Length: 371
Image (cartoon, rainbow, N blue to C red; front, side):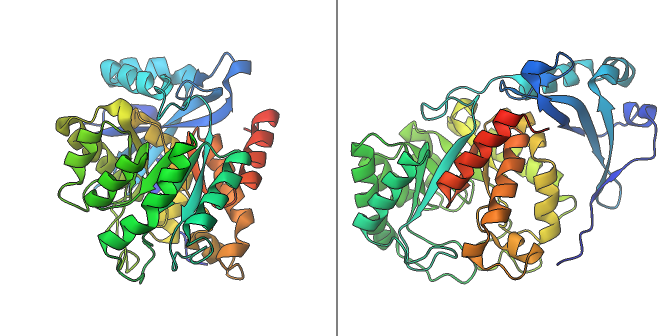
């Protein structure tokens, strides 16, 4: 297991030290509990999940960051001393506000997205469903098991994957999307290529899911804006072939946050409104085990961006680093644990291979109000 070095450290400074800080501050909800049953919490993104404290984070000179945790009951006094009244009010509004429906789905609930890779070489299930008939049957089974969205991809983005022409990618995904969309299923197209986005949308795809945050193809932003479809913007450091070669961050959580904020603002300038945007911190894409675990421990910070959050941890290599004996298809336990962690942080969509197990885990977590 990799050594875990935390880049966000709890500060020994008192509350006044943060109040006097002149640089940007970041706010991560914490102290999660079932909001409906506790008047001392605030709702997390309009859901039943609530938070009872804020972790306030600031960057440190020389790299990394430090933080303090402030219970909501003490927040008002700190806000008055900080001179950041308008800033904090705006942050709380974004953290609490219910997100608009996304592709017709209610964002007050946690939805499961089923993965259908129409590929011979994806890291976990490559070759399992690489015909149209197999992929459609797999997708329909996932919907029956509780998936709200089916994510169809025709190109593996694992390190070392073979290049696929855009025409080949289109030939793989379009028949699957067309058949699923005709049956009324909500389908997302997992691609970084504008031509594939166009073909998928014409075939009935309802969502564009791009691991490059609409940066991988110079036409992607234009195509996405013109489509009127919702988009999923993921963070990835580097490109798939080399992204895991010594990735570096000043502070992974804050660097990813800043990147996603920049991409949201770029989308808005291009005509894609924030209510059409979902963000994904990109677990496993250009990140070490330490980076991934820091992101998973502070997922709720991304609610401050005012968009729904998509989390993809299913069968990923960070689980294998924690449990080296587990090959991709033996990582169900870690996938479930990280999915429930995502639900706990108020994530609205979770991308998985194992739909019924994830649906059941979230249902049990919700019913028992795990804090």
